[in-house]
Each structure stands twice: as C-alpha cells, then as structure tokens.
Length: 139
Image (cartoon, rainbow, N blue to C red; front, side, top):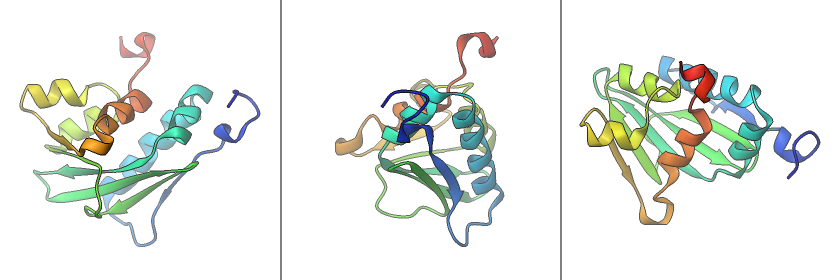
C-alpha cells in the first residue's frame, strides 16, 4: 500500500487484556514510538505476521508480541504457539528493542538466544528491521 492514505498507515500497538508487566509496557512504548516515526515502518509493521516471545532471563519475565493484520498485541508470558523467541539479559533485550543491536549478531556473540520455526524463520530479523535505528540516528 502506498504511504499517506492506505490502511498501512494505521497499526495499533496495544497491551492485551491483563498484561501488566513492566516489560510489556516497555515493548509497547518502543514499538509505538518506532511506528509513529515513519510511514514506511507502519507499512512494514502492517505486513508482519507471527508471534515472537521475548524473555528477560535475569528477571524471569517474558512477553509475547503478536503481529497481526494492522495490530500488534503484547501479552505477558510466553503464549504458544510461538514462531520465534529471543531470550537474554534485560539490558540486551532493551538494546535490541531500541534498535541498537541485531538479534543474529547478538546470538552469534552469545548474548541472546534466538530461535525460530522453519515456517517463520526470518521473523526475528523482520522485527529487527522494524525497530532498527536509521543510520543518522545510530550515531
């Protein structure tokens, strides 16, 4: 869809009913901010499909981010079925959400454990494409 007037301009980011964790709120805030900044990101978010779990292993807290048609829902806990998961220290997860790190690179460095199903193997990288910083902001 073209920028400026299609349905891709509207992507709702919301906490699922009952989601109360600080991690869920942080994920919601980061995603809302990233999507609000760019029509291209809104279009990318509208096309994403799948469910990714994020787990802060040092705090024992996790959330599930469900990418559906024009809606991103954040739930507390790992809610099956998952297409992918990313687990690691809270600081590494927030760095990832801020777009300051790449899940594949962090996995190879041993800082995060990234898994994905064969049917949605690239979901972690597609989510990274949604949140990564533009070159001028990364400086």
